Length: 223
Ligand SMILES: Nc1ncnc2c1ncn2[C@@H]1O[C@H](COP(=O)(O)OP(=O)(O)OP(=O)(O)O)[C@@H](O)[C@H]1O
Image (cartoon, rainbow, N blue to C red):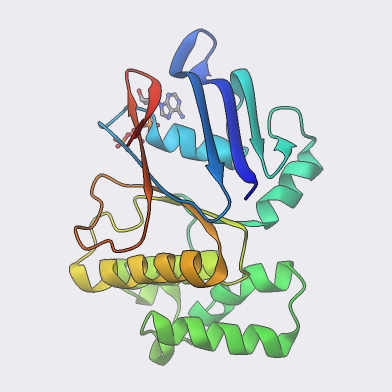
């Protein structure tokens, strides 16, 4: 299996010489399911965002799918992003679009045919138990329902990588279970590499996974 993510001496931060992540070195292979944990403020979201080409890299190198994120042009980064599904706090659903339209968006961007979009959207909506709300608008849904739609949207176009930041934070067990089930299915059945920031790995998480943690700006792995 090839590496999807390769960080070499990676240092990240928001100001020059104020490093949040210092000299990280890690690889994430195709099909890995990786949790990132660490104390509040340790840099989990910062690290995750860097994988999406969303943060300037202060030092070192970061390759995502063989593209050097710190050297790539804007158009390369945009192309890379088309192949990544994200569930970030500020990548909200489009309020003016229905649930179904939101889920179809990444498929349309990636050139899916109309019929394929319909079939895939229906399947995903059924999976997150929201088929009956497909014509509703995001603001008519509960927080847990919106998050389930966001996760379905992240998976819809079968990206090679999914990045999720606390996807089950504040959700009840019902919605959390659905989110974990979608992510596990994406990993097992679609071979999608998954990287999730979470404070709490579910106790019954029954597929192989890796766990990175951040402490004092350094990225370690639990073995
Ligand atoms: N946009 C920003 N500008 C400046 N500093 C930031 C910015 N975003 C985060 N930071 C700082 O970077 C550090 C790491 O933040 P980050 O959000 O990555 O932590 P986290 O581990 O995800 O925390 P939490 O678990 O509380 O969400 C913190 O000290 C934070 O104050």
